[in-house]
Image 1 (cartoon, rainbow, N blue to C red):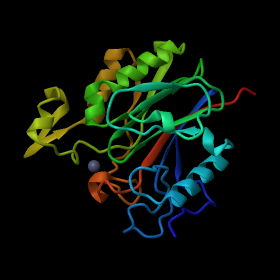
Image 2: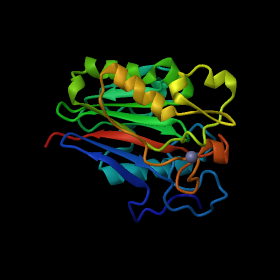
Image 3: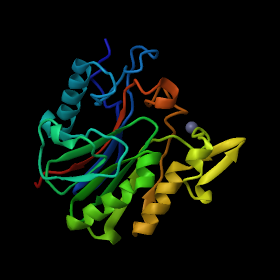
Image 4: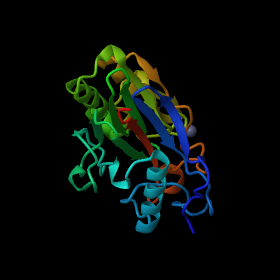
Length: 254
Ligand SMILES: [Zn+2]
């Protein structure tokens, strides 16, 4: 039995509560079997999890947020830089293959991305009710997924001086050992050497956000790899595992 306990908020972690947009990330919550890489809350339907478990988690989150389960829009990510605009609840996410970021200004819309060590970034203009989410692993980060998300938010009417960035849990520099073929693609300012090279992924994305004109940036509070019983971590558990969901809720107009 892998479905998390539906009695508490233990899988939901608020990152921001605004007047028009709320931001959350998830942790695994109650896990029934720490050796099961899917035990706990996960909404990812393409990394080997059982369909009924993912569906149960999606329904549980929808109940908690007070939205229809089909209104939670999550793309089929592929480590690229494509960002799509979501106008309203999308039903199943069939049209979102190869998409690694979403933006929306639709009231009642929930947009999220799945990660397990990669960096989830949520961008919010809470004055205008515009939100964006981006999946920034090292490939997507280098491909410019976060800059593309900022650009699409501005197309929806967001103003740069009102945009704040919230980073969810991701792999820390100490855990993110890479080969020279990866580290050589990053600026030296974002690479540390502890015997082997390590990339500061959140630092790299912070610098790209600053380049894009976003100056209020909340860095990750915790490392996924350091906390594998709390968060899913592909490095700790293998890629055949659940995923942490980081998402924005644009509130319905009251
Ligand atoms: Zn770590």
